[in-house]
Length: 373
Ligand SMILES: Cc1ncc(COP(=O)(O)O)c(C=O)c1O
Image (cartoon, rainbow, N blue to C red):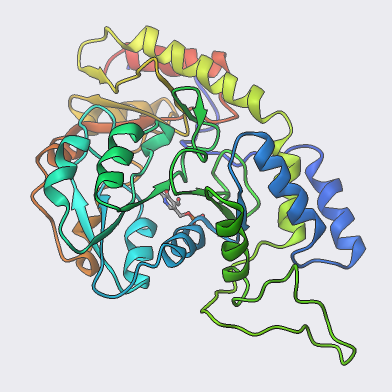
């Protein structure tokens, strides 16, 4: 690369955003002595509703969110769940945890998202759910997916781990399908350290999700008796998946200024698209005007990928494939015949677009790429 500006530190592919008010808010919970799930979790869930999530139920990870949604959907042994292989292993593992089988569907080459055109062929009489993953925060073709599933009485559980704040046809991701599952892990848009949330479509489903996240006990109505223990009768399986108040306090702090931070990511994405779109050796992912990405990472296809990664690394910019198809893990039974996935894997790469990237850093990254690889 010809660019001469020298940097001391790498520009990492991910970062962890912690709001300046986080320490105070978490300390307040620690000093209260009430660490477990309580009022602060309720407040965090309320704030998630304010950013457009429908009936959110928080849990202690995105993986837990997926498993809880699958359990609530009644997915069990012998069932099939269609999902893309372009995701993190958590998506497929949650299906296996329920005793069901993941059925891998091909993706769109220019988004990394589940391809509705390949979906029809994947349904069998055993299909009970589809898990579309909003890869890198870019919304899937939700209308087409929901329509195909509705016609077959199949449940849609969006894996929105990368997509907090994304929208589709002016509706927030987390309001559109039967369930949507978010992650608040350390490198996500909003972190609680680890954490997650499931959204759903009715007050009754929300109530059931809340009970299932805590042993199957309805915490809101199971008051302690005179003898000290809560009065309840468990009639269904439940997990210990609840979020704690000190984690929720971190989440509340990290939601401050969330929209502005999303806007900043959009500005960086616009700069990347403008500057890199016409560059030889690069093919940008799609960006349709009917949806707004959460821009967790910025994906593109590039020729001679190893040279590209190496050249950027020399200039202290970290590019990454992030995750590669999960069906390659033997637990999922080995590689399936997914032609677009094969092509995607040959040239996909992602650039940093997180909260620590301002327009100046983005311009530096562009300059590094333009100087060649
Ligand atoms: C697509 C996807 N789904 C689910 C998860 C699981 O989230 P968590 O790490 O919060 O369990 C991740 C984690 O990064 C992910 O990338």
